Amino acid sequence: MKAENQNVFEVICPHCGASIWIDASLRSVLKVERGQKKKESLEDLLARERERRAAFERKFEATAELEKKKKEKAREKFRKALEQIEED
Image (cartoon, rainbow, N blue to C red; front, side):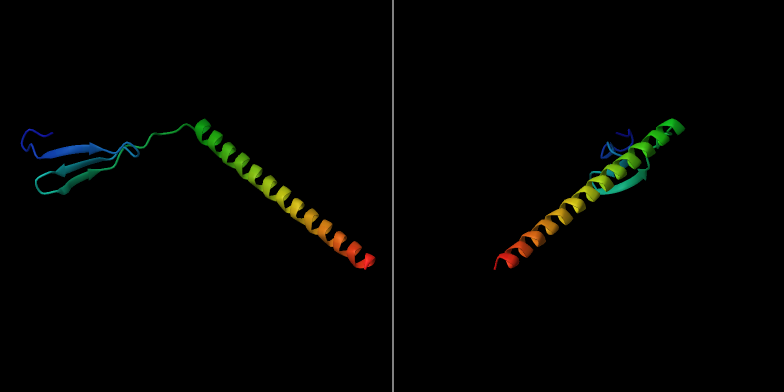
């Protein structure tokens, strides 16, 4: 709280660290200051990029495997349908 006005208080966002000053009597925002971003090292950035690429590769492989299963299932149904036709 500021000494000159007891109706003004500061709220800090837990997510981004922004400071917001609010006047309780006016019910309005008086001032907003953006939070300081943490500076990351190059190693942290590279590690995050490796994780992102690995996740992408896992998703791609899972999608490819799912497509293989779908094709195999379709081939099996087609084979059964041909056998049924030959029997009739």
